[in-house]
Image (tube, rainbow, N blue to C red; front, side, top):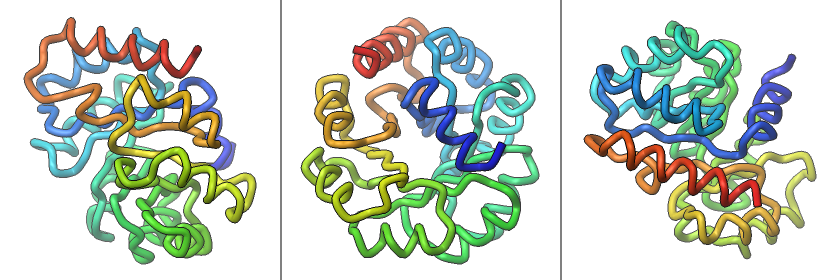
Amino acid sequence: MTSMDRLRDSLRHLPLIAILRGMKPEEAPWVLEVLAAAGFHILEVPLNSPQPLESIDYLVRKAPGMLIGAGTVLTVAEVDAVAATGARLMIAPNCALPVIAAAKARGLIALPGVATPTEAFTALAAGADGLKMFPGEVLPPAAVKAWRAVLPKETLLVPTGGVTPENVAAYRAAGADGFGIGSALYKPGMPRDELAQRAATFVAAVRQ
């Protein structure tokens, strides 16, 4: 299975990427348990979290059937560190060509952040497997629809930031393939029951 196939298959399973910014390694076991039970298939630990590589390593070992990756990957050195954990996904907030190239060279799925069509085409030409439309707050469903008219039809678009259970239907109708969900789903220190409730709400919203 190619990187593109793996990403598409995971998004078909459930078009949600759980962004676990701020999660501590000791929280990873119960967070994984809750999100797995809710049906999540893609988990992202941003590298500006506490001891992120330790958390990623745990998730890779304990959830081999999931697509585990790192977010906020900004340098080639960070790509190397992420690849060493066995993670399969590299997500960035920006379109840095050396980072995309390093991710592809190491067999990682590359999902760089883009905010304009120019960045989108640049990222795809560099080998990106999909595009993180970021920040979603300034890229509403109308932007997804407009991008769909000019990008290659197979392009994966994943709005991230500002996505809520209330607006996922509009994004899907415009052509979004998936969503990166951060603080609307997970916040450091939140109770287990609250995470379970938020996860269930998002899952219900995208499956309607």
